[in-house]
Image 1 (spheres, rainbow, N blue to C red):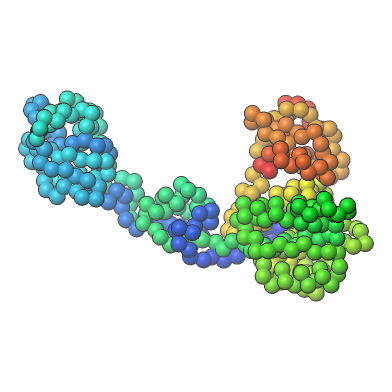
Image 2: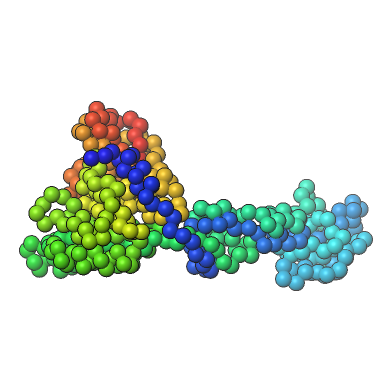
Length: 393
């Protein structure tokens, strides 16, 4: 049995970005760039006004005389002539500054008198944005590896980009094993049935961590049925996630179901709590990650292993998916045993408040768990106010 850090090192060693594809800007939200985005034009493309007001010549403001308004300049319809002595142009934010003008007087500092304007205060700033003052043609606007959030999409579009090269998102198939599992909403009618509380949760989790869920199947603990499901999943997905069937029971067949494909073990069991039964294998060009059947343990191990795995396959940094942050504890945590522990905690005013239950079978507390608190094996424990390493859950 290996430790958590060694398991992550092995995971990173077998996971590589899947490749790239070019997609439309309109479809790029949430994707990760595989190539830099460079500007296809200057921004702004010419000197433009930063304010609504009047484009003037500074030399005409010294005498205090009214200026003749000879036209208007709009962003989509600029004034096309030069301003000369004693003239000005009504201008709007983003509109091109006419030739001859070197300043924009804010409309609040100008008094309109028919066809003329009298400037009450010229102000200290010119209120003109120079051509290319934001960026120049060819400038790198976004670096490869950047996730395309709303802010990044603004920048890409501003650079006149409509197609983006991004990393392909890994496709994931979820296999939930267990005779006792049934569709949520149907368990109450059967005394020994248990709602499958993981499959839908994992589908949401996969989407949040750069993956695409392409299917989920609930299967009984029958070798032939399991193998058929494994074949289907491997044919269609980059990653197969199996829940349950990884312990030592007579019907725990999770790893055996892939035996036909000659899986190569990356790790089998990790010295952590909860989640010791977690395992990872390569199968051809694909990966199979086994999570415990216990829903709480499965969600913890999904956060610890599936998140960095999907991030890596989608071109990201697996280390960024395991971004540990130091926080202080509101209450203490007792001494630990021989396995590294990841305690569920709530975020309260920037501090970590451990949840009252550490039972890996307790599902209700998941709704309140914002963090995982990391505690080393054989640690003597923490007191209230101690600094601990936490991971957003």
